[in-house]
Length: 129
Image 1 (cartoon, rainbow, N blue to C red):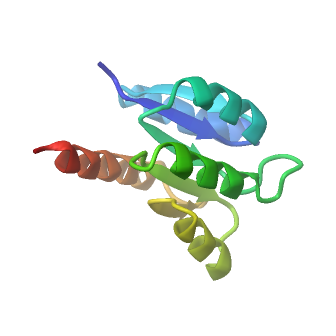
Image 2 (cartoon, rainbow, N blue to C red; image 1 turned 60 degrees about the vertical axis):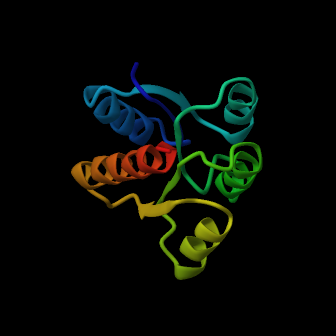
């Protein structure tokens, strides 16, 4: 069974590029353009990982809010922030709110895929008795 990844990104081109790359790697991917739609869908079925942009449409910190909500509802869920916001305060804020990793959008697709794989590897190790 393939792992499910939710990508929450308000820029359609970026959402599709990342989605297509993940699908080619065998992941099932569901994309969302804003926090509200993502939260409504994820409340009924959590993914195996979430990749979230910080700024989502009219919510400059919508991704941070979604990260906090996901961490409350799924403490072990791997969360990767993927954002153009690259200030130290944004990176530290994302990690403090519960993200497992924070990458900026200038990251290469191979680097992003390697981070996704590394997060799942850690999940698998922690799941073993």
